[in-house]
Length: 117
Image (cartoon, rainbow, N blue to C red; front, side, top):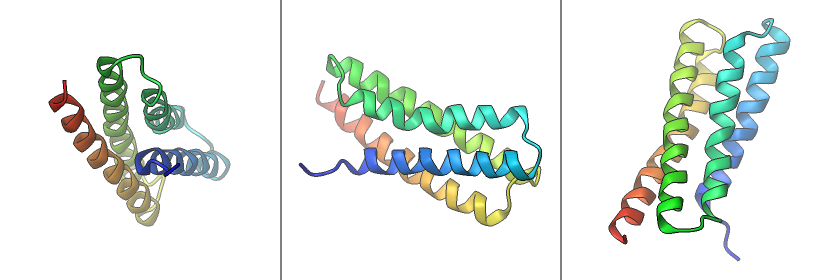
């Protein structure tokens, strides 16, 4: 069975978010904001994964919409972390690029799913 690109990307994004948050916590005396990024960043993949087992087309769309919202929230936290120097430019760019790829795929998938309703 061919792997779903969105599932693979979102899972890698979650792994990278967890690793980034661990490094920040260990090296920069963790912050309450870390939990926000950790939750939103890992929620993207969890909702995409859950959508694969949706009970209906409406449920599938809802899960993808939640994943998209979490993706946007992750972008916000990453930007805030960069501006407050909690992460450097390279860390930000890597994570932001991953998040953008996932966001674009989610938007395209949502458009397709909504057309077929």
